[in-house]
Length: 372
Ligand SMILES: Cc1ncc(COP(=O)(O)O)c(C=O)c1O
Image (cartoon, rainbow, N blue to C red; front, side):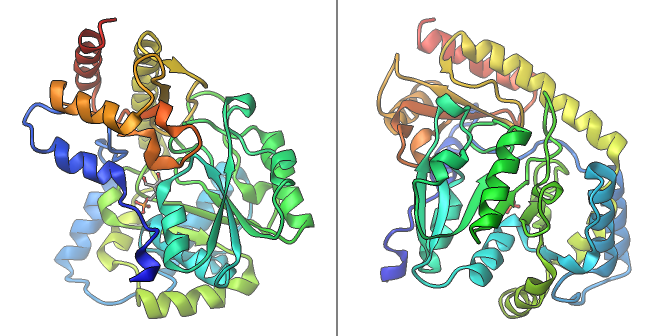
Protein backbone atom coordinates (compact mmCIF):
# COMPACT_ATOMS: atom_id res chain seq x y z
CA UNK A 1 0.00 0.00 0.00
CA UNK A 2 1.56 3.27 -1.14
CA UNK A 3 0.53 5.40 1.83
CA UNK A 4 2.46 3.14 4.19
CA UNK A 5 5.57 3.08 2.04
CA UNK A 6 7.36 5.82 3.96
CA UNK A 7 6.09 4.92 7.42
CA UNK A 8 8.92 3.31 9.30
CA UNK A 9 8.65 1.25 12.46
CA UNK A 10 8.84 3.07 15.77
CA UNK A 11 12.32 1.68 16.52
CA UNK A 12 12.07 2.08 20.29
CA UNK A 13 9.17 -0.39 20.26
CA UNK A 14 11.30 -2.87 18.30
CA UNK A 15 14.15 -2.42 20.81
CA UNK A 16 11.69 -2.99 23.65
CA UNK A 17 10.45 -6.21 22.05
CA UNK A 18 14.03 -7.46 21.78
CA UNK A 19 14.87 -6.29 25.32
CA UNK A 20 12.00 -8.31 26.76
CA UNK A 21 13.72 -11.51 25.67
CA UNK A 22 16.15 -11.21 28.61
CA UNK A 23 15.15 -11.40 32.29
CA UNK A 24 17.86 -9.03 33.49
CA UNK A 25 17.53 -6.20 30.95
CA UNK A 26 18.25 -2.67 32.10
CA UNK A 27 15.72 -0.41 30.47
CA UNK A 28 16.85 2.96 29.19
CA UNK A 29 14.82 2.70 26.00
CA UNK A 30 11.18 3.44 26.67
CA UNK A 31 9.82 6.79 27.82
CA UNK A 32 7.05 5.31 29.93
CA UNK A 33 6.80 6.58 33.52
CA UNK A 34 7.19 3.91 36.20
CA UNK A 35 5.73 6.28 38.82
CA UNK A 36 2.17 6.03 40.14
CA UNK A 37 -0.58 8.42 39.08
CA UNK A 38 -2.02 10.70 41.78
CA UNK A 39 -3.97 8.48 44.26
CA UNK A 40 -7.38 9.96 43.42
CA UNK A 41 -6.98 8.73 39.85
CA UNK A 42 -7.34 5.13 41.04
CA UNK A 43 -10.09 6.06 43.48
CA UNK A 44 -12.19 7.78 40.83
CA UNK A 45 -11.56 5.04 38.30
CA UNK A 46 -12.65 2.39 40.81
CA UNK A 47 -15.76 4.37 41.60
CA UNK A 48 -16.63 4.59 37.91
CA UNK A 49 -16.08 0.83 37.56
CA UNK A 50 -18.30 0.11 40.57
CA UNK A 51 -20.99 2.34 39.09
CA UNK A 52 -20.57 0.39 35.83
CA UNK A 53 -20.17 3.55 33.78
CA UNK A 54 -19.89 2.27 30.28
CA UNK A 55 -21.25 4.89 27.93
CA UNK A 56 -19.79 7.17 25.32
CA UNK A 57 -19.09 10.67 26.53
CA UNK A 58 -19.52 13.65 24.25
CA UNK A 59 -17.04 13.45 21.37
CA UNK A 60 -15.12 16.40 22.86
CA UNK A 61 -14.94 14.67 26.24
CA UNK A 62 -16.57 15.11 29.65
CA UNK A 63 -17.41 18.74 30.39
CA UNK A 64 -16.14 18.30 33.95
CA UNK A 65 -12.73 17.18 32.70
CA UNK A 66 -12.53 20.01 30.18
CA UNK A 67 -13.27 22.42 33.02
CA UNK A 68 -10.50 20.90 35.15
CA UNK A 69 -8.05 21.31 32.29
CA UNK A 70 -9.15 24.91 31.82
CA UNK A 71 -8.48 25.54 35.51
CA UNK A 72 -5.06 23.86 35.18
CA UNK A 73 -4.09 26.50 32.60
CA UNK A 74 -5.10 29.26 34.93
CA UNK A 75 -3.41 27.73 37.99
CA UNK A 76 -0.16 26.91 36.23
CA UNK A 77 0.26 29.66 33.63
CA UNK A 78 -2.36 32.27 34.51
CA UNK A 79 -3.96 32.01 31.10
CA UNK A 80 -7.69 31.89 30.52
CA UNK A 81 -8.69 29.02 28.28
CA UNK A 82 -12.39 28.45 27.90
CA UNK A 83 -13.37 24.76 28.30
CA UNK A 84 -15.15 25.15 24.97
CA UNK A 85 -11.74 25.33 23.27
CA UNK A 86 -10.55 22.04 24.76
CA UNK A 87 -11.09 18.61 23.22
CA UNK A 88 -10.15 15.41 25.03
CA UNK A 89 -8.40 12.92 22.79
CA UNK A 90 -7.16 9.33 22.80
CA UNK A 91 -3.64 10.10 23.99
CA UNK A 92 -1.79 13.07 22.59
CA UNK A 93 -1.32 10.73 19.65
CA UNK A 94 -5.03 11.19 18.92
CA UNK A 95 -4.56 14.94 19.22
CA UNK A 96 -1.85 15.03 16.52
CA UNK A 97 -4.12 13.17 14.19
CA UNK A 98 -6.91 15.69 14.76
CA UNK A 99 -4.57 18.67 14.44
CA UNK A 100 -3.02 17.52 11.20
CA UNK A 101 -6.40 16.51 9.75
CA UNK A 102 -8.03 19.85 10.38
CA UNK A 103 -5.06 22.10 9.63
CA UNK A 104 -3.35 20.57 6.61
CA UNK A 105 -4.60 19.36 3.27
CA UNK A 106 -2.96 16.70 1.17
CA UNK A 107 0.51 17.79 0.01
CA UNK A 108 0.75 20.78 2.34
CA UNK A 109 3.94 21.30 4.30
CA UNK A 110 4.32 20.60 8.01
CA UNK A 111 7.63 21.81 9.47
CA UNK A 112 9.22 19.50 12.02
CA UNK A 113 12.62 19.63 13.65
CA UNK A 114 15.19 16.93 13.00
CA UNK A 115 15.64 15.26 15.44
CA UNK A 116 12.10 15.07 16.82
CA UNK A 117 9.50 12.59 18.04
CA UNK A 118 9.21 10.02 15.22
CA UNK A 119 5.43 9.65 15.08
CA UNK A 120 4.89 13.24 13.85
CA UNK A 121 6.36 12.46 10.47
CA UNK A 122 4.64 9.11 10.28
CA UNK A 123 1.25 10.70 10.98
CA UNK A 124 2.02 13.13 8.15
CA UNK A 125 2.79 10.30 5.75
CA UNK A 126 -0.42 8.52 6.72
CA UNK A 127 -2.37 11.68 5.89
CA UNK A 128 -0.44 12.47 2.69
CA UNK A 129 0.97 15.63 4.23
CA UNK A 130 4.55 16.64 3.43
CA UNK A 131 6.80 16.85 6.46
CA UNK A 132 9.68 19.30 6.07
CA UNK A 133 12.62 18.52 8.30
CA UNK A 134 14.56 21.43 9.77
CA UNK A 135 17.87 20.41 11.33
CA UNK A 136 18.58 21.55 14.89
CA UNK A 137 21.77 21.04 16.83
CA UNK A 138 23.83 22.17 19.77
CA UNK A 139 24.65 25.58 18.24
CA UNK A 140 21.15 26.77 19.26
CA UNK A 141 20.73 24.37 22.18
CA UNK A 142 18.54 22.28 19.90
CA UNK A 143 16.02 25.08 19.53
CA UNK A 144 14.54 26.01 16.19
CA UNK A 145 15.06 29.73 15.66
CA UNK A 146 13.15 32.18 13.47
CA UNK A 147 16.25 32.72 11.33
CA UNK A 148 16.36 29.04 10.53
CA UNK A 149 12.61 28.76 9.96
CA UNK A 150 12.77 31.67 7.48
CA UNK A 151 14.90 29.52 5.17
CA UNK A 152 11.85 27.33 4.50
CA UNK A 153 9.00 28.48 2.28
CA UNK A 154 5.32 27.56 1.99
CA UNK A 155 5.03 26.15 5.47
CA UNK A 156 1.43 25.64 6.55
CA UNK A 157 2.09 24.50 10.10
CA UNK A 158 5.06 24.13 12.44
CA UNK A 159 5.23 21.64 15.25
CA UNK A 160 7.71 21.87 18.10
CA UNK A 161 8.12 20.03 21.42
CA UNK A 162 9.38 21.56 24.63
CA UNK A 163 10.64 19.98 26.85
CA UNK A 164 11.70 17.80 24.01
CA UNK A 165 11.92 14.18 23.19
CA UNK A 166 14.67 13.07 22.45
CA UNK A 167 16.92 15.91 23.70
CA UNK A 168 15.33 16.97 26.99
CA UNK A 169 16.00 20.64 26.20
CA UNK A 170 13.49 23.35 27.11
CA UNK A 171 12.86 26.33 24.80
CA UNK A 172 13.89 29.70 26.21
CA UNK A 173 11.06 32.20 26.56
CA UNK A 174 12.51 34.59 23.96
CA UNK A 175 13.06 31.91 21.31
CA UNK A 176 9.59 30.47 21.80
CA UNK A 177 7.90 33.86 21.71
CA UNK A 178 9.73 34.91 18.54
CA UNK A 179 8.79 31.69 16.79
CA UNK A 180 5.13 32.06 17.72
CA UNK A 181 5.05 35.71 16.63
CA UNK A 182 6.69 34.86 13.33
CA UNK A 183 4.15 32.08 12.74
CA UNK A 184 1.22 34.37 13.56
CA UNK A 185 2.52 37.09 11.23
CA UNK A 186 3.03 34.62 8.41
CA UNK A 187 -0.19 32.59 8.78
CA UNK A 188 1.61 29.48 9.88
CA UNK A 189 -0.23 27.32 12.40
CA UNK A 190 1.96 26.90 15.47
CA UNK A 191 1.46 23.48 17.10
CA UNK A 192 3.05 23.07 20.50
CA UNK A 193 3.49 19.58 21.95
CA UNK A 194 3.63 20.27 25.68
CA UNK A 195 3.32 16.69 26.90
CA UNK A 196 6.46 17.01 29.07
CA UNK A 197 5.33 20.19 30.78
CA UNK A 198 5.57 19.79 34.54
CA UNK A 199 8.74 17.71 34.17
CA UNK A 200 11.15 20.65 34.15
CA UNK A 201 14.09 20.62 36.55
CA UNK A 202 15.94 23.88 35.88
CA UNK A 203 14.19 27.07 34.89
CA UNK A 204 10.63 27.20 33.74
CA UNK A 205 8.44 26.17 30.83
CA UNK A 206 5.97 28.41 28.98
CA UNK A 207 2.82 27.35 27.23
CA UNK A 208 2.45 28.73 23.73
CA UNK A 209 -0.91 30.13 24.88
CA UNK A 210 0.96 32.70 26.98
CA UNK A 211 2.08 34.29 23.73
CA UNK A 212 -0.81 33.74 21.34
CA UNK A 213 -4.40 32.56 21.42
CA UNK A 214 -3.93 31.26 17.91
CA UNK A 215 -1.43 28.60 19.01
CA UNK A 216 -2.59 25.01 19.04
CA UNK A 217 -1.53 23.29 22.22
CA UNK A 218 -1.37 19.55 22.71
CA UNK A 219 -0.82 17.92 26.07
CA UNK A 220 -1.89 14.78 27.88
CA UNK A 221 -1.87 12.51 30.87
CA UNK A 222 0.84 10.03 29.84
CA UNK A 223 3.99 11.67 31.24
CA UNK A 224 3.72 14.28 34.03
CA UNK A 225 0.56 12.63 35.38
CA UNK A 226 2.06 9.10 35.05
CA UNK A 227 -1.03 7.73 33.28
CA UNK A 228 0.25 6.31 29.96
CA UNK A 229 -2.20 3.39 29.89
CA UNK A 230 -5.24 5.61 30.36
CA UNK A 231 -4.72 6.82 26.79
CA UNK A 232 -5.86 10.38 27.30
CA UNK A 233 -4.65 13.66 25.89
CA UNK A 234 -6.13 16.99 24.95
CA UNK A 235 -5.90 19.65 22.30
CA UNK A 236 -6.61 23.37 22.72
CA UNK A 237 -7.76 25.12 19.59
CA UNK A 238 -8.90 28.58 18.58
CA UNK A 239 -12.70 28.73 18.92
CA UNK A 240 -13.31 28.63 15.14
CA UNK A 241 -11.54 25.28 14.76
CA UNK A 242 -13.18 23.33 17.55
CA UNK A 243 -16.24 22.26 15.52
CA UNK A 244 -13.93 20.82 12.86
CA UNK A 245 -12.10 18.87 15.54
CA UNK A 246 -15.39 17.65 16.95
CA UNK A 247 -16.44 16.28 13.56
CA UNK A 248 -13.15 14.40 13.17
CA UNK A 249 -13.37 13.06 16.73
CA UNK A 250 -16.98 11.91 16.32
CA UNK A 251 -16.04 9.95 13.24
CA UNK A 252 -12.63 8.56 14.17
CA UNK A 253 -13.03 7.80 17.89
CA UNK A 254 -16.71 8.53 18.77
CA UNK A 255 -15.48 9.46 22.26
CA UNK A 256 -12.38 9.16 24.44
CA UNK A 257 -12.38 6.24 26.94
CA UNK A 258 -14.95 6.98 29.62
CA UNK A 259 -13.36 5.19 32.59
CA UNK A 260 -10.08 6.96 31.92
CA UNK A 261 -11.85 10.30 31.81
CA UNK A 262 -13.41 9.70 35.21
CA UNK A 263 -10.01 8.67 36.56
CA UNK A 264 -8.37 11.78 35.11
CA UNK A 265 -10.68 13.98 37.16
CA UNK A 266 -8.44 13.02 40.08
CA UNK A 267 -5.17 13.85 38.32
CA UNK A 268 -4.71 17.51 39.27
CA UNK A 269 -3.05 16.95 42.64
CA UNK A 270 -0.17 19.44 42.48
CA UNK A 271 1.44 18.48 45.78
CA UNK A 272 1.72 14.86 44.69
CA UNK A 273 2.82 15.77 41.18
CA UNK A 274 5.58 17.92 42.59
CA UNK A 275 6.96 14.95 44.52
CA UNK A 276 6.96 12.93 41.31
CA UNK A 277 8.80 15.69 39.50
CA UNK A 278 11.46 15.61 42.22
CA UNK A 279 11.95 11.88 41.69
CA UNK A 280 12.70 12.47 38.03
CA UNK A 281 14.97 15.39 38.88
CA UNK A 282 17.01 13.18 41.20
CA UNK A 283 17.31 10.59 38.44
CA UNK A 284 18.26 13.26 35.91
CA UNK A 285 20.98 14.60 38.21
CA UNK A 286 22.40 11.12 38.75
CA UNK A 287 22.26 9.90 35.18
CA UNK A 288 23.49 13.11 33.59
CA UNK A 289 26.53 13.13 35.90
CA UNK A 290 27.33 9.49 35.25
CA UNK A 291 26.71 9.46 31.50
CA UNK A 292 28.84 12.58 31.08
CA UNK A 293 31.78 10.42 32.14
CA UNK A 294 31.06 7.95 29.33
CA UNK A 295 29.65 10.05 26.46
CA UNK A 296 29.66 13.64 25.23
CA UNK A 297 26.39 15.34 26.04
CA UNK A 298 25.62 18.49 24.05
CA UNK A 299 23.04 20.15 26.30
CA UNK A 300 22.07 19.82 29.93
CA UNK A 301 18.70 18.09 29.74
CA UNK A 302 16.48 20.45 31.71
CA UNK A 303 13.22 18.60 31.26
CA UNK A 304 11.29 15.50 30.13
CA UNK A 305 13.09 12.26 31.05
CA UNK A 306 15.69 11.87 28.32
CA UNK A 307 19.40 12.32 27.75
CA UNK A 308 20.78 12.63 24.22
CA UNK A 309 24.30 11.26 24.20
CA UNK A 310 26.94 11.49 21.50
CA UNK A 311 28.64 8.13 20.83
CA UNK A 312 31.20 9.25 18.27
CA UNK A 313 34.13 8.07 20.36
CA UNK A 314 32.77 4.51 20.10
CA UNK A 315 30.77 4.28 16.88
CA UNK A 316 29.15 6.12 13.98
CA UNK A 317 26.25 3.68 13.67
CA UNK A 318 23.82 4.20 16.50
CA UNK A 319 21.49 1.33 15.63
CA UNK A 320 24.33 -1.20 15.45
CA UNK A 321 25.83 0.23 18.65
CA UNK A 322 22.62 -0.26 20.66
CA UNK A 323 22.07 -3.71 19.16
CA UNK A 324 25.57 -4.78 20.28
CA UNK A 325 25.03 -3.36 23.75
CA UNK A 326 21.69 -5.09 24.16
CA UNK A 327 23.07 -8.41 22.99
CA UNK A 328 26.24 -8.28 25.07
CA UNK A 329 25.23 -6.64 28.35
CA UNK A 330 21.43 -6.57 28.21
CA UNK A 331 21.16 -2.80 28.38
CA UNK A 332 18.41 -1.38 26.15
CA UNK A 333 18.88 2.11 24.68
CA UNK A 334 17.14 3.86 21.77
CA UNK A 335 19.30 4.66 18.72
CA UNK A 336 19.31 8.28 17.54
CA UNK A 337 18.15 7.19 14.08
CA UNK A 338 14.66 6.70 15.49
CA UNK A 339 14.36 10.50 15.66
CA UNK A 340 15.49 11.62 12.22
CA UNK A 341 18.42 11.74 9.85
CA UNK A 342 20.32 14.80 11.01
CA UNK A 343 23.52 13.33 12.45
CA UNK A 344 21.43 10.83 14.38
CA UNK A 345 23.82 7.95 13.64
CA UNK A 346 26.09 9.57 16.21
CA UNK A 347 23.58 9.76 19.04
CA UNK A 348 21.62 7.51 21.37
CA UNK A 349 18.77 8.40 23.72
CA UNK A 350 18.55 7.36 27.35
CA UNK A 351 15.23 7.44 29.22
CA UNK A 352 15.30 7.60 33.03
CA UNK A 353 11.95 6.01 33.71
CA UNK A 354 13.24 3.40 36.18
CA UNK A 355 14.48 3.79 39.76
CA UNK A 356 18.01 4.92 40.61
CA UNK A 357 19.26 1.41 41.45
CA UNK A 358 18.19 0.22 38.03
CA UNK A 359 19.93 3.20 36.41
CA UNK A 360 23.08 2.57 38.49
CA UNK A 361 23.29 -1.04 37.36
CA UNK A 362 22.96 0.13 33.74
CA UNK A 363 25.74 2.67 34.17
CA UNK A 364 28.05 0.04 35.74
CA UNK A 365 27.45 -2.39 32.88
CA UNK A 366 28.13 0.33 30.31
CA UNK A 367 31.31 1.47 32.02
CA UNK A 368 32.71 -2.01 32.11
CA UNK A 369 31.65 -2.86 28.52
CA UNK A 370 32.99 0.38 27.06
CA UNK A 371 36.09 0.23 29.31
CA UNK A 372 35.81 3.64 30.91
C1 LIG B 1 6.96 14.17 22.40
C2 LIG B 1 5.86 13.17 22.56
N1 LIG B 1 4.63 13.49 22.16
C3 LIG B 1 3.64 12.61 22.25
C4 LIG B 1 3.82 11.34 22.76
C5 LIG B 1 2.66 10.38 22.76
O1 LIG B 1 2.08 10.23 23.99
P1 LIG B 1 0.61 9.70 24.28
O2 LIG B 1 -0.04 9.30 23.01
O3 LIG B 1 0.81 8.59 25.23
O4 LIG B 1 -0.08 10.86 24.91
C6 LIG B 1 5.09 10.97 23.21
C7 LIG B 1 5.33 9.62 23.74
O5 LIG B 1 6.41 9.20 24.04
C8 LIG B 1 6.13 11.91 23.11
O6 LIG B 1 7.38 11.64 23.51
